[in-house]
Image (cartoon, rainbow, N blue to C red; front, side):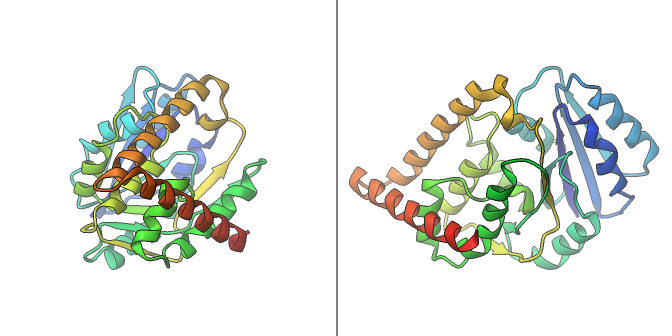
Amino acid sequence: MISVVVTCFNQRDFIDEFFNTLHALSDVKFVFIDDGSSDGSERRIEQHIEQLEIDAVFLTNRENTGTVTSLRKALKKVDTEFVKFIAIDDPIDINEILRVSNSEMVNVDLLLSPVKIIGHGPRKKGLAARSKYLSKFMLLPRCLKSCALMSSNNIQLQGSIFRTDKLNQIINQISGVRLIEDWPMLEIFFSDPKNRVKFYPNSFSSYRVHENQITNSGVHLDALNSDLKRIRQISDELASKGQNRLLVGLKRRVGSVINWLILGISS
């Protein structure tokens, strides 16, 4: 079985579209969490859950706590072997997610796939290049993957399925990070050679570009900048284990070149 954790923060305009893609499936559970929305999202989600015959838990935060804190809270309600998380403004193909989780997650801890970029905005072109980046990234040896991750955040976890116990271990290691989860989670994941990662070439998730995203909101810029500092600190801590600072700096430079080459090919 698989659980889908769906986060929401002031995304009421997209809730109807998201629920229109859902239907009752015996092997899928849902955990919805509203992170302190002020636009009526909470009530709209409740109405849809009442109307649909789906296995769903609905959690709410009194105030906006950030993606990582919401995930940590939601994961306490997940009792399935696999889990996927997504924002409620990003449509999913629930049948494909179930099929992929049943067929591809054998001896796999993390399944990565590209996401389909939809919507409008100046960030769309760059995000589309990042989505194409993933297929090239997965061809790299593991040591070079680590270098690439040290240098920048070019992978979106919307197109991913985790083994639940592995995601729990990783999310609990990200302290002091509120809004950005992709980069530190992947660095921690790839830093452990025991973690098994697989690439799936087809999209079963979307990422919507729109003007009201949390990352484009001025009120969250301080939190985002704080996240970036903490993420770089996590990156340095992971990279420095048993290595000197010169080697860490060299790896980061190599990673920058790798990212530049891959993004150039993908665009």
